[in-house]
Length: 380
Image (cartoon, rainbow, N blue to C red; front, side):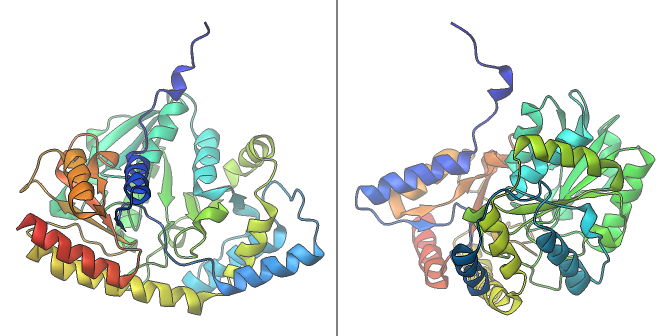
């Protein structure tokens, strides 16, 4: 009997396991407040849907250019100019099947098997798992709560030789953001080590104390990943993009041609419409801000008072070590006993995550109020 390839022997995405358990509870007639999944509860913006309706009546919607519809790439370039005041040539923008496709293309183009890439923990688990499947050695950098779980140049001194560094701002699961000076420090640290800097900016637009800084305002040599999933509220449309340095542009194009032929045409049409929907999308962010305020006030009353910054994105990363040292079991009990679903921290930090839970506040405000009340009663 043939054996499966070793590259498939990676960790599961534990949030999907929580989602499965929550669905089973609902199927059995139980109620669930979903705080486990990082997904807006709002549909795609109206202008995106209207663009799709027009296209369905008048266009073939076949294969597109492997790098994306030219008008969408130009629209994303205008987004950088309008939103950040940064000039990004459309030729450097590659539209992908979600940010997942962007990371895959970027890693394949930038890193050979055996390359060493550093990333902070806690962090989004798919970074680590995709790299391991590609034969890239992941170098974990333990970020500290005292510094807001931020990536810092000093952490790289612990990493030895590296070929790349991956950071996120705002970060999942902590909501931590990096300002221009902090990004500049990381750019210089990577330049000194002749290492690629990859920056995940998919939660840009969802911030609570001013706009996030794009690393593209600091350097044109970073690899920048973004997506229509979060701020643009289009998770299921599977549409993202990567801004690549000129040195990687042709490699990414050839990889895209062979791996995906092109991103989904209908999703690209929707994305172009979404780029004209800032007003509607900012209203979503205002609701996230209300939800965040509810949890930042109520979770400490329940005894969860050691929280990550939550400066951006829609997550609260909470230290639950006062109650448990086994966050997966704690999450299982919480779902079974009070119907609140959250993600155990081991998804984001295999070492210290057993002491943490991630709560998503992307849902309805009434659900956040009710979840907080249930947690307060349960933990008291």
